[in-house]
Length: 229
Image (cartoon, rainbow, N blue to C red; front, top):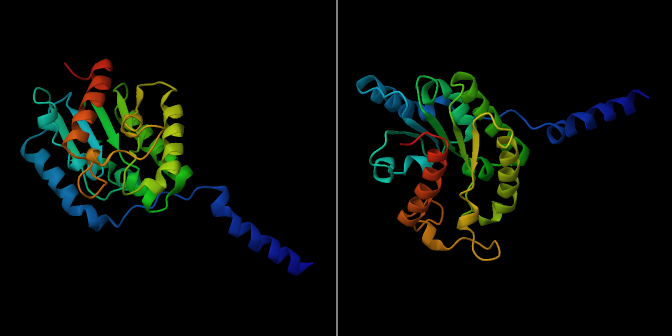
């Protein structure tokens, strides 16, 4: 009888990771210290004005020339390449909390899925980050961009799509949350792989064409939310 109980307990422990998504695992803090230090130094030298639109996320944000996309608006770029939602959550006190933005735009999820965070875990991390923003900056629009389909990570698209659907449903609850579907326009006919022209040569990061389309889509949502002139 003791043996059977021991085996039952062992089996239950093995099932725990499947039953409940594990806590988000961020990279070691030291990996991002240079990026965080650069953000803090920038703000110390020239503080971002109240009402600016704050972009946070991975390399898709970091490589986005926000000044070129919105020359007449004040945008803040807190993108750091290779990061995940867990990293943004961990460094929230540097990336988002000290600011007084008119809106926050989040793009992440690519790296999370490629690193095995999974559908439930990535969805949970999106919710955690959005709720943190709402807690510290109540009343401002929070835009969550869909995880983009890409040539390089096309094999992950079915799972990414499920995350997008779950996050869209979460944002539909209201309270200033806006899900921005940048994914559907990128897909080919019949939901096929996106045309390579959307991307740079690596098949992952956006090309000038890609950013131009994203600027149009995201700008429209920001205007509807009252965050742009």
